[in-house]
Amino acid sequence: MQGAKIYRSWVVLVCALCGLAACSPTGAPGLPSLPRPPASAEPVSGLTAVPGAASPAAAYRAYFAALQRSDHAGAAVWLSDYSLRAQEMTREGVRDELKMGVYGALRYLDLQVQEVRMVDPALGGAPTAIIHSRVTLQQGMTAPRVQEQWNTARHEGRGWLINAGGLIDRGRADVPPQTLHGVTVRLLGLQRYATHARLILQVTNRNDQAVWWGGGSSPALTLRSGDDIVRVPGQALRFDARQSYPTIVADVDQSLPAYPTRVELAGWSPVRGAREPSWSYAFDVPGWQAPE
Image (tube, rainbow, N blue to C red; front, side, top):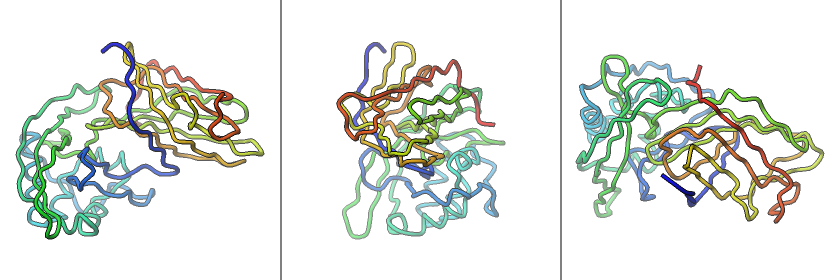
């Protein structure tokens, strides 16, 4: 596709990745969307994944059926190890989160699978599919609502399992960090989802004063892949003096058909919202690698 794409929002979270990301663009409760667990969680637990289903649609229907029965542990065993590791989740954590809060009060009434589309593994991974469905949910005494949802499944072991949060795949960038004006930025990785993408950075501010990223008139984040250009505006993010931020997450509210070959981070300044940013970073990524 030719030309530039401007996306609506940019969300930055400090120190830990989100857990199961929302699969529905409506803003209402999805199927399911969970807050993140402790960063130390490991996807190794007493709840063992099932062997898998014969097709992506069959895996999703089994997952949904467990939710209909309020069998939260049964739903958790249908999630892939791959997606749980990517988001540092355990199946026990998924089970417990499904019991609590808004998801504990949801009734899962109906599932209609509309389309299953295979995705070419960009980094030589296992076969992956995007599942488009219409889901009917009811919360408390409110009227049932039908939601469009996009989820993913991965062929893992002997069959298909559901990827938590609609994860497609994840890659790491093997490129050196860059230091400008006392601020070192390292490009760590990128996660692609059915409905969005997530860039992961590490930032260290060695200055005796705080610095800011984003908030000016220029896009804070630009992703380039061939003729495709994704420009993302950013809210101002402050990095305090003499502080290191091991995990900075920048979310793009659109899926990426390919991994970017160039990542640009603009709008860095010691002054919040400066009209003339002091500096920017540009990372050329000739090839993304599968996580070690």
